[in-house]
Length: 126
Image 1: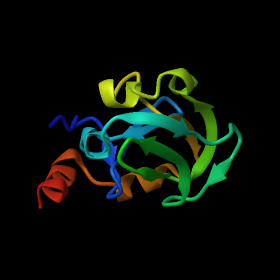
Image 2 (image 1 turned 135 degrees about the vertical axis):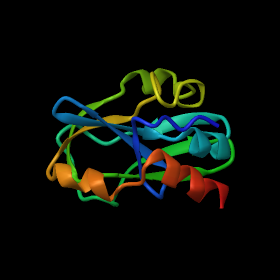
Image 3 (image 1 turned 180 degrees about the vertical axis):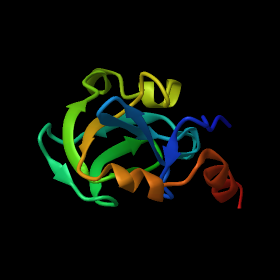
């Protein structure tokens, strides 16, 4: 299972990547694999604000409905519109085209509270 080392991970299986002044957020390969075939992604509105750990989106799969939590607090500045027509992108390319949202962080230091790839791997293997 891929766990890119250039990303930060939340214990709730979201990944976060710094891209200039925003944080790109998606779900890990482990999470999308556990969910099964994803059929719908209910993403937040641009301009919504979330605190770290707050539910900000919902992903529906053939197995279950899963909350997606903000790995860092901030304001949603972009959502992946492609997921409206093709939610399966999350299954096909969770670290690339299947990203969910971009957040302008209110506190960049919150990234340091997330897990490294090695720590995340240890968690999912436990």
